[in-house]
Length: 133
Image (cartoon, rainbow, N blue to C red):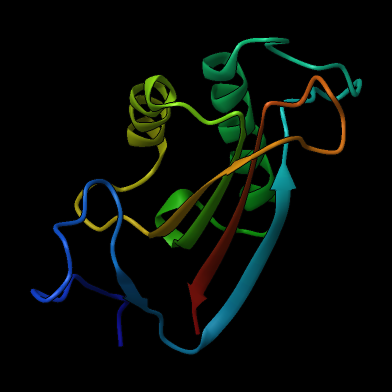
């Protein structure tokens, strides 16, 4: 069985995400929330949400790759954005589209938060991926 991406007609039209993803039994990968830190633990894109989202996706790519996965294997994404505003959405969507499959996007949750663990972190993103069994 392959992954199924379901958008029930009773729910609002999905824009860049799927309401439901059914993944077959296989290897499940949970990637901890990634932030915009480089390999030296330096903040990349300090004060810039767009730059931080871009770097976070690069970190996610590395984490997925370490587990033998790609963004095509991602079934769920959760975004945490400090002080989320409507003007952040186009930047997040633009960068997301470069990494995530737009024909069959993963399930997704976007949460605005007051703060993350470190003041300079503006974005944290976690993913769940499933590799075929």
